[in-house]
Length: 399
Image (cartoon, rainbow, N blue to C red):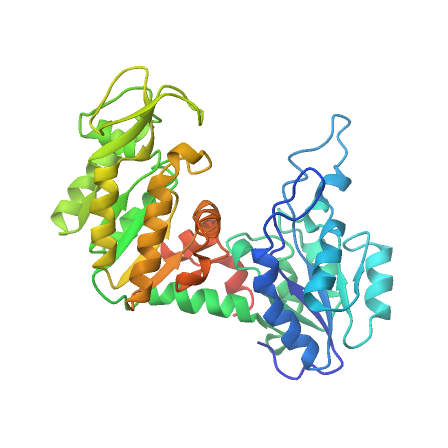
């Protein structure tokens, strides 16, 4: 954190990209909750706070006439809840770098909080536009990046803006520092055995992470849709299950590399299969390598759950990224929630457990076990890239 903030205006990039329902009500405020320590620390030092964040992808989801759907993606919907969380009035600017933002930033007094409109309403945000970065910088005296979830993006509000502050006028927020420290526990000196649980739909999303983990992991437990690419790569029959045919050779290479490096790479022995992609579809259990035509794998099976639980409970470090099945469907959630319980149980015995990735976070929250693991990351892609050893522009810009 930056020092000597008294009387200064502090521009904080937060990650308030929270899910909203059709009534624009927040359905999960985890990211807002995680940002509170930095905001409160800055306020306690006698500064004023200007918050900026993106929400959704408004530039990609424009109306038929080409205009941005301001109502759907406005940060205005978050202001009341933020006021409640901070127990004080929060001011809202109806633009990001327009007259309202500048007028309200200029009038801001120590102890006050201002929220700017969605940064992605600005066309130059995602391209890292220099002019937009300069305008954002003019709003404040100090810049703090506390948005780990957006740290892998070289956007105007995460990276370009930092160029306009001196080294002692910019820094990382408390959440960002915590995220980095916890990720480093996995990267640099994991207590062993170290187990990675990797789920989700696609092998292609996790290639570099798997490659990296093969260098220092003891066990990799595979689940989710990418199971069936590995299964087919091993000449299994996968029915109508999700598969990436272009990645079969790569899956074989990863299996071989795991063997060469003495990493135990587990595929589920059995799978809960369904006659269609629906919660009420007919379902049964069969060997993962023998899924019949007309059926698709939607969850790991009971034998796999027991095997995976045993590995997890014997681990001293656990990284979990991605659900093991379609946990949104109650009938195919058993694998994911059983693994969540195992991760919580091993945490109680002293293991360090790190949960990262949007769906994994949703799963641990939905399971009611969020308080029973070591750390839940707010970053999905950012955490993966950090663990892959990549330099994140949002961190580099203020370091």
